[in-house]
Length: 122
View 1 (cartoon, rainbow, N blue to C red):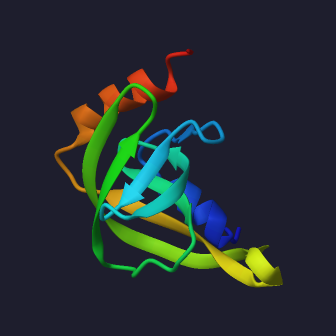
View 2: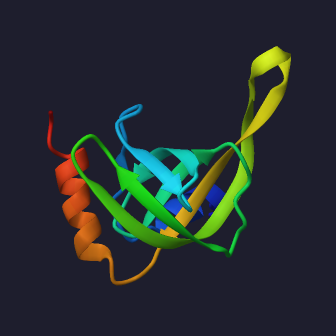
């Protein structure tokens, strides 16, 4: 049996991923780059960005919702164009799907954040 790349990636995941409601969680890379968070797990973050992130580079990220925030560091493991969007004056801009593996040692803080920000209705 041959597995696709996506099936292999899912098979290697160690932690449950929690989907993020549209605009329910905001990510900010290196203080000035807003990203759309797709999902979050204890070990990583999937996001959409307006620019390509450098695979292998470590980034600082602040995740926050209306009530709580958490600062994390992680290393980008994937960044590729998934679509283009029309912006001002008819120009088209790429949208990248990127994934970041979170730095070890943050697991307890990330679990608390997931419980407070994503699992509590409000």
